Image (cartoon, rainbow, N blue to C red; front, side):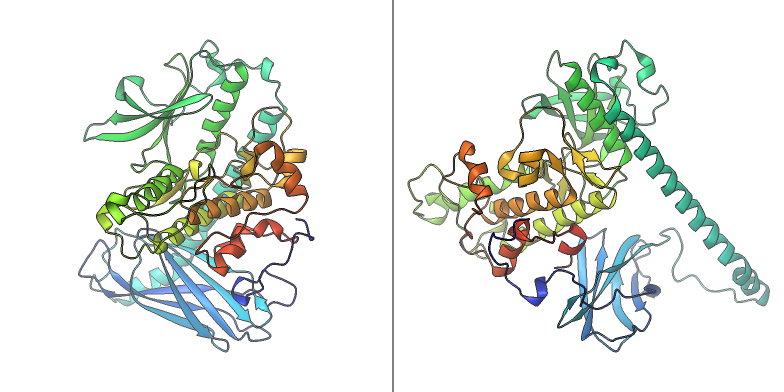
Length: 489
């Protein structure tokens, strides 16, 4: 964003896209063949990738197969003159994605991505009844079924995007004082909302966290078969009309965003049967990432666990990563591979939000949650906005902003874009590497803006690799970076 801020390391592995890079692979397709159906719920497949021959062959290709059910990526390097590749003996689950990137000495192409759903109810190894009439019927009818399903999906996506665009246009144009968001005006909220939960089925328990305007409590929803553990977000007593408006916008944003493995899922809401609205989301047992990382740091510096560790006597002591390979699993301390996984999962979630033209605006470790299996979920859409015009959101109202995580244009001109989210992502990576340290240690908040305008950036943390530091410094790239590029670096 400021070309005078200093050079960025130019490792080819982390080069951004430019005009001399290979062309994007075309006509990417996959074909799955069942090779082991002994586990009917999760059979093993051979997955064959194919694509068209480009005009100029790259040095090589790299393929990424991401399996959502296992949160696992399988990579494969392929020679540049190839137009096919094979993954063998892969448990795909019911949903996976394949991405292909062409690579040469001049850089990397834009990724070609294919999303695939598998029919989990079909018996993969059922004997074939190969009568001529059946084959003819399948050959004639099946293409029409596929085309029909594709048209249905396309129409549904267009409808959802149109509804979301109209909603956010209207919500930004409305005057706060002109709308009554309390339950005294039932016409404001839809009476047949599928997300509405019956309040008698919700049990509210202990407090998980508190903020300036709201409280998050643990709870559960009573169902016929089991009690589902959830997190319940609510406003403090006697909220203002502006706070109510923002809270209802948060509910509507979460309704509009389809589910994703790395976003906190909406369970439901209560907007009519209670004095103030309630937002019910999935419960992440390990809490927020900032607290999780700081807990790990406390354990690492606990003499009774790892012996004495000298820490500089300063209010803003910078956290140092120690060799985590020898840490016992039962101590629940993330190892280096876990930290890398955290970063990638966050990038995947943010790439999905940016593809929907949703800007988070408050991306930080405190707004990322950790599940029992170390799955990462991006939370807190309270500051999020849909971008329906030019991919830019201008904040026109006052209020506190998290200056240590914001891009310069967000602080100085209240302009938020996907690239400003990328800046915040770089700061979040710094939090991960330092196990939850506060960004810009030793710098007073009132002095930070002037320092940033002058080109100041945080020093490289101890034990931070060159590649990771490139990502942390993404805000220095004058061309801008996007999450669709970051996830393949």
